[in-house]
Image 1 (cartoon, helix red, strand yellow):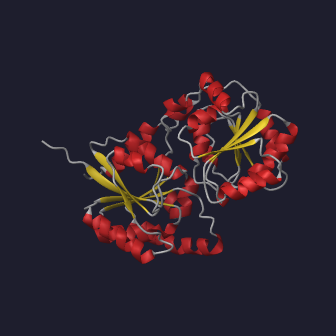
Image 2 (image 1 turned 30 degrees about the vertical axis):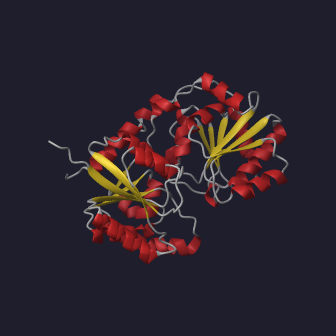
Image 3 (image 1 turned 90 degrees about the horizontal axis):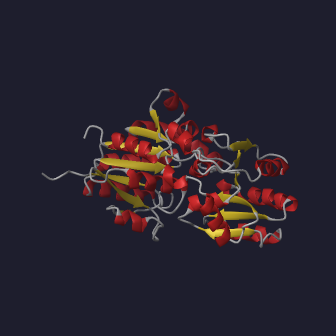
Length: 370
């Protein structure tokens, strides 16, 4: 007797190594792929970071069209692919409520189950984007059969406060394979030797070089910190459209020898073990995976108070305002110091942040009613 595998079409802009994409891959690796399989429709024409792994896990990567540049082609592609692939279920990963377009296309293509997951608490698009969001939220609520979010703040942005308060939104934790994040002194020493920062005070940041992540403020904080601590080093992990401008800012401040641009890395847990503090001054976030990961490795975090308070899962996190002098950030970083790193995995697992818990929740949602 053959087993029927349910295939789900995941609709997302890209499958590069960003927070939402990495979360999806963690879920994908953890689900029972004998019962459930993911295929991906992405808009990026170039090969993405996770394309090869998706294929190796049995998924298919399809190319679509940008909604902002080619809305008609985007709509037609989704409807046609859902119909052609007989996809009963789709999962739309969205940063803006205009995701109703993907949901409508999937509905017309025949998808009975239409889940949408909010990944952020803003689109950063200003007044026009906010007005479009107000108009679009009722359409998202109408067309979605299930609404998911990593935090209350992210849920309110995509679906509206009332939908969240009424219990229509399922909160889905950004779970981790916690075993990978157990702090190991040997790994810390190895990575610090590789990076030649053995005796340094290491500040870290993981995130795409884009306006949301606020790298300019990060560099300002680090420049002040470096004045106080001559052996300070900054590790910047990620890629993005603003990387060259951040590099220019680093040069302008004379910090070339103290700032390491490490690019996109697949060994983020190892790199976090080498750090002494994570600095994360984003203008907005839905529920940043990076801060959850850092806590799992026992890494202190100094983050912006614009980020949802739900990310404070342990006593390792301090939230500070972005307004005013950056000196408070420097003091917070140095106050943590270089302390003994313990394991916080048990605390995170008790709060539902193991990936097996998240994967089981996703599986239950997608296999509901067959």
